[in-house]
Amino acid sequence: MNKALFGKTAVAGVGVQQFKRGTAPYSERECLVRAIIQACEDAGLDPADVDGFVSYGDDKNEPVRLMSDLGTKELNWTQTVFGGGGGGIAAAFGSAAGAILTGQAKAVIVFRALVQDASGRLSAAVMAHHLNPHMAAAGLVAPAQVCALRAQRLFGYHGVPAETAEAFLQACYYHGSRNPAAVAYGSEFDHDAYMASRMIAEPFHLFDCSRENDGAGALLLVSAEHARDLRRPPVHLLGVTQGAEKGWGDLLENDDADLYASGGFGSVARRLWEQTDLTPTDIDVAQIYENFSAQGVTSLIDHGFCTYESASEFIRFENLIAPSGQLPVNTHGGNTAQGFIHGIGIALEAVQCLRGESANPVPDAKTCLLAGGPGAPIVSSAIFGTAAMV
Amino acid sequence: MIEASPKDLDAPYWAALEQGRLNLPTCKNCGVWHWPPVSRCAECDSWGLDWHDIPLEGEIFSWTRTWHPFGGTEGLEKPFVTVVVAIPAAGNRRLMGLLEGVADTAPVPIGAAVKGRVSHTRYGETEIPTILWHLAARDGDAQ
Ligand SMILES: [Zn+2]
Image (tube, rainbow over all chains, first blue to last red; front, top):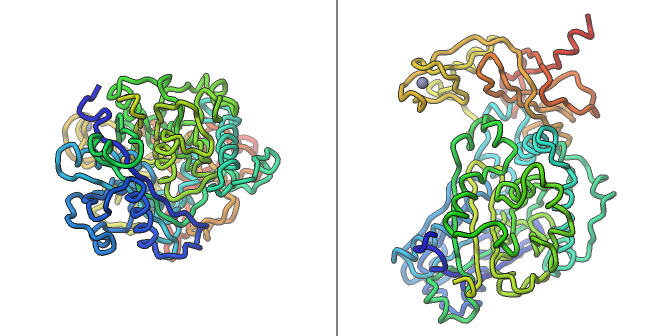
């Protein structure tokens, strides 16, 4: 176990502003400032005392530009995780924790803000980060198409049934339909409507794809001691890993044949279990960044909850829903059914489900896995835990 | 983002493709196939690449058929099939390309042999050389 990290920092407050894409009533920066203020009020910490900021996915909001609105006294830590997709989401907590545990900052906001007026379409921005002539010449211009290539291989070569992706989606929609804050609130998942939704890039129908929202999310990370003095029950960071292993990355579709259909979590997942001395059976609930349905499936396989062979046994609707499933996933509805501000909602739910605030509670949940950005060249994962774990 | 420079490691690939030929590189020293190209071979700690003419023959590794009119695909009629093709003559390194001659509803068989020809894809204001693949079995059918 990495004792230097395990339980030594905690999320003490969360804030979010979420709107339908293209309808945010504020500028991107104001959305972000409002989310940060919410997170500080949630924690009971003066926003002026926030001294660090970390983001991911090419966020355009330089923290120094937030200082006037927040009243920041000292800006001591600013970082962003490399990568154009959502693969940096858990890694951002690693950066924040590194700053806190080495005394370089005391109160660090992890954030992501996205308002179409300011940043354009996310899918276009992600692709601009990765696009090259090899891809454009083959008509590959969107993340959906690249993930579709991986999904065809998952289904068509490795033999994982496509029904697993539908079961994953169905669980997201089940939770989203019961969450008043979700875009899918009140709308049940319907198999026929799913199959009838228009084809985007085979095997993905429209329903297989996350759809963008405007907004911003912020989470306040502080030391575990500091968190105990604040208003809310601390949600501890137990472990966090990021990166890519040899044979995975930005390789013009030349990832190793046995990794190609995966989410890219090989070394990330292995090191996460080693770092925390936990195993998949220790995880009570999981928030899995599903940019596309099949990548939700590969994330579960990569983290060892099942294998290609046992995927259809484990990735069943009943198994993935709160409160009684073996591993409830995306208890707020996930990127597909709750909303998608480049995945920050997944991190927010990881914290809120452990505080007992989920719209779909998992009774007595003590641990939550957060997995970010499957299929991206760089991915990351984290495990959060309640005070009972520390 | 998409502009090519003559200093790019893949410049010889594009130059050959413009002339209708497929060129792929090996390490100058140990001969291992590198794609995408590298400046340094980490297998043998040496620098430099040799480029080789490769026949336009391969096997379908994966595929997707795009129906949505994504910005940037205006030059391609929908739906179109993108394939990732493994090239046995180049150590099974893979290339992205387009598959022609399949019905809009036909599944594409992973592992099927394909042959290619060089064409161009319009992307914005530019024409990028690309490989159009077709199922090799069709050649036999036609004879
Ligand atoms: Zn070599």
